[in-house]
Image (cartoon, rainbow, N blue to C red):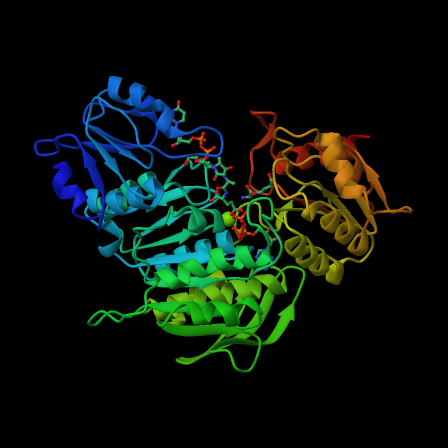
Length: 490
Ligand SMILES: CC(=O)N[C@H]1[C@@H](OP(=O)(O)OP(=O)(O)OC[C@H]2O[C@@H](n3ccc(=O)[nH]c3=O)[C@H](O)[C@@H]2O)O[C@H](CO)[C@@H](O)[C@@H]1O[C@H](C)C(=O)N[C@@H](C)C(=O)N[C@H](CCC(=O)O)C(=O)O
Ligand SMILES: Nc1ncnc2c1ncn2[C@@H]1O[C@H](COP(=O)(O)OP(=O)(O)OP(=O)(O)O)[C@@H](O)[C@H]1O
Ligand SMILES: N[C@H](CCC[C@H](N)C(=O)O)C(=O)O
Ligand SMILES: [Mg+2]
């Protein structure tokens, strides 16, 4: 594409050098991956500054540079106020505005995003729609899956991926939208049709200044839905009525608001909820009728996830019987309340709870079913919100009969220091510290007796443990299975 044509997507820019005949073949934010004809986007990162790699980009064949700072280069330089935001808009234009080609559903909130996107994928598939999916576990086009590094990838990867989805004829796409992505403008350039809010509780206070700042980032998804109605276009905000943050978020958009929850005022509402150890049943009342749901998903928090997915599916025009069939078929999401087989005496559950609220929800659910003792194995990630560490530890102690505190992904932090942060406010008994995660899981399994439940929290579907900058193979489910086998053999 001609650079000048591409730049018509931006309202303002300063140009340095001759742009007339410049042809752009590719957009790239990593100088090491620049090819002949790339537009190199300089991003001031958390670790390094992309502006420092202009020479390498030019040497690799960059046709032009998009920069925020004044820079010298042998190729034309386009200066903008925010390269991150401008790059998102340019990437959308470069790839033919792919998100205008199919409905896009974005899901944000502290907990439940992955679960809601998987529920939506399965509802849309049940409705014979081919879907795209982007989130924490993976990226999917139809049934083909690809690995991802971030829950919400950077804008250049995102827009290219949406173009691939369009070429593969997806009927709709569902994606998780993290607060980091909203704050960093990764989703600028996405034309969302439905925006879903799950809930807000403490997390990521290493990144966001405070809870208000975090809420503000979430609100950007709803603001991005727009405040004007295009001819014939219907856009929806799907909001959790029972979460106090919902009242703020609904004011961030002038589009239609559909609420869900257990309160009588919600548009999509759960009544007669029956929480059982192997299933959850409830009645779902909606503006287009009522259905009974008998689901394999466990816990009241999953009732909220199902309501959110159903409300978004209703907005996307899916009939109620299809929603019902799909929710009832859904087996669960990898690493979310996933049982580990192997013992006839006690139960072992692996779950991705890595925030205070999710840990509390899962432990509350387990306590509701436990015939005997509840054991929890849990740690906190390194290079992440330190403020959640003591909170998670006291929740573990409050709800479990015995807590074993261990390492999650220590990353570049000292595992002992993370554990000290977790246990700093605890006193008395009811917990122990076993730094090595494999040993901690084995310890819990060895302690468990008939009727007990062991919860292994925090890493869910992850198949690695990140220590320093290295990811070592580690899967809680495999480690637990091995520990159960070893304990049965003794
Ligand atoms: C804090 C944060 O968001 N960091 C993201 C950021 O990394 P960074 O700022 O460190 O990048 P950097 O290494 O300083 O590089 C800056 C620029 O220089 C370029 N560069 C660098 C080196 C070089 O030789 N040449 C060059 O051009 C880089 O390509 C980049 O464009 O840009 C990277 C590329 O897009 C991201 O992968 C990375 O996410 C890291 C891995 C991360 O952990 N992010 C977390 C905090 C995150 O975003 N999490 C959210 C929420 C998860 C949840 O739901 O809870 C998510 O959406 O994943
Ligand atoms: N609606 C919910 N409310 C509270 N906790 C939930 C809810 N849904 C799931 N959880 C808990 O949070 C954990 C993570 O769920 P899920 O992966 O769906 O959330 P997420 O928002 O995608 O998380 P992440 O921010 O890491 O991407 C689950 O394993 C469960 O413990
Ligand atoms: N998306 C979250 C996942 C946390 C998972 C937990 N296992 C950890 O490593 O802290 C994050 O990057 O903060
Ligand atoms: Mg997720």
